[in-house]
Length: 179
Length: 253
Image (cartoon, rainbow over the protein chains, first blue to last red):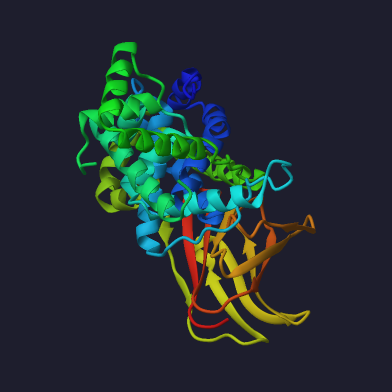
């Protein structure tokens, strides 16, 4: 997944080109929203957190290190914002049918949707630091190096967290008799 | 399996990622042969991997993109005006020596005032609290002359629903963003003089309006729930200052 193919936009934005930053918002809004949604599982909160992340990144653009990937940088802002938001609200997130679920798909069936819902529930039961790794790996298709860079943790920690997360997910789904 | 991340875990992970070199694959096969339970583990992980990879992508709404872009534009406009103002002062101070003298003489008296204006901190918060229960029909005026806004909050009953109406005269505002508690309100509004009703997604909880000159904006919030309701208004004045006002209605609306 090449999310930073438009480094020119980033540089232009840093040089004060306002339209360039709008271009970045258009380019990254969806992937950032996806990450946040998988962390919060609440469409309203996710939209709000996504917007806040972009506003914060715009306001802090001077502190962005252009040698690093812009997507990783903004993703980190969004993840921190999402984790803080969830801690602030201190609530459990209910898993409901989500807007992205395609129920008109002919292959969509009840068993599959139940499995997906249980998987999402299990995902939400993970600690935020484990969930973040899973989301970046599976939702954003990031490699270990990029995940490590985004979360500012060693690559080995990424691997161990991911394995720990998968183990917990597997145990949860096994309890539900899926695996 | 142990709770710590082991070399075997590393092998399994690489296998799941399809990133296992041939020699390592052989090693994993040998390990599985020694401990057949590893095979079941690996199969379970593979299934889990497939499910995780199939998590559907989410699509943010067009309104939320627009709201983000409007908010960014408001910040950009504010920055431009602030920069222009700073440039004007610098230009003035770099003028004839007389200006230096004037600046020196006046400096002690007005430095705080000038800096206070030029470096006005954006997002100053001016809460307007509407405490207690408001029952229809009830109107409370909000006086915000110094912020360039005048308005009133009105609780009315319309079509069997209780509505909280916020009416503002954006006398000096050029940009106005309304951020409200989306859990509590459904939202529609009337922007005059255009007279066009706009309806907003209740999900984003945000609205950005471009206004110019004297303009009256009526926002209608259907009070769908009770409890503390918070609306936050952000606006950019013609002067370039971005300000924020919280309107808090504590208790049932």
